[in-house]
Length: 270
Length: 295
Image (cartoon, rainbow over all chains, first blue to last red):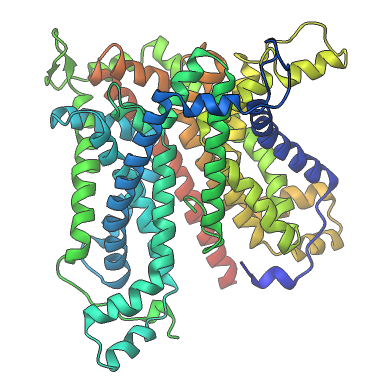
């Protein structure tokens, strides 16, 4: 991200600002690091090697049937909701950015509704609606709910990508005799693909991470990973949850790295 | 390359085919459900758990009961405290970010974003582990002889505060960073050259000129924090009832959906009022800038 101000001298922040920043990073990261370290620590009171390093909690996680079920549920929901929302969102973003039609402004406003509305309201609204439609609460209803909030993020991400698009490339393709279909698949699509990919990545992460809306639309016996972790935490602190949480953080870290590589800048919601 | 604003777009009479599925989806899974919540809020719970549509305002009247007003008040207090704490911590942070060297800045930015993407249940749990009876804070404190018995930090106002602030801090820092990143820092020097004290520079130059970022950040934190109940639930032992708990209870336990709907509409109303305040300030900001340019 280069800006015009990059060249200008910037003041050195006062000491108090630096101190507060350090404090903020401390409270953000110390809990997370604690969790990671604890996930590798052996049982404290047990026999054998107290406080030695161990992978036993990770073995426990991978042999826990319920956790694996929750994981596969999360991945299943994530993949389908990502496919759904990316397709719908990309098409909508193309139309919104490239044409003018009645209701365009209204659609733009509606797109922002899931972003500003308290999650809990969307969750319960969908719960009521699914019950009225007699849709069984389970993986299907979760996917429908996740698509609903992910579309907005996809539309915004892809629209941002289309905004800086050099349309003379498409004109050149048309001038050279390409059909609209060819122009789209050979020129437009490859160029906006990074935008679509970051939209899809965001949709997947949002789906994988979501707690509240899933909490309302999941019904009984279809826990996703965050729901499962929540249920486990309600029972109390355990090394197994430490290991599972560390794994989730690792997955997030990888996703953020991937997300920041192709398009530096665009963060969630921004 | 032609500036995009000048590009001519085909003007269509109806929404194009490409956008129809998304419009349909929003209509079917967003607008209709929200409309139903609105209708439900004027209905009553039937004797056998069904819904009686008798269009009464009794749910709203009930919501003005002292018990529920106190719950709303609790949520407002927690959301304001969280937003205010995030502002006090986030503003200096954004300042440091905006004035850092570009390379260092992108690392700091990344460090702000990573927790933002980390699952919030995991983060709340991490605080629970950190502050727990056998957690590192207690072990360290006892090891250093600061206290003899482990202090129960979890299930306290402090752990809830810590959980809320660490969860919402990135929502505050990012818009503030955007505002400060565009800020012309030579204005600070100019003010100082004209004899302003550091205090004056902060309150009369820096803060007024980054007001839009402050308000955006405040809304970004305040709005979701208002409906938040999972973090207080995990870290506070569910001792104070919040709107989020109350609404969830209506839907998943007592099954009084009409009352729950009315409560959530009041929640939306509060959010909308705060957004309106935001939009008005933005508008005023634009007008101020327009008049400043006109002069």
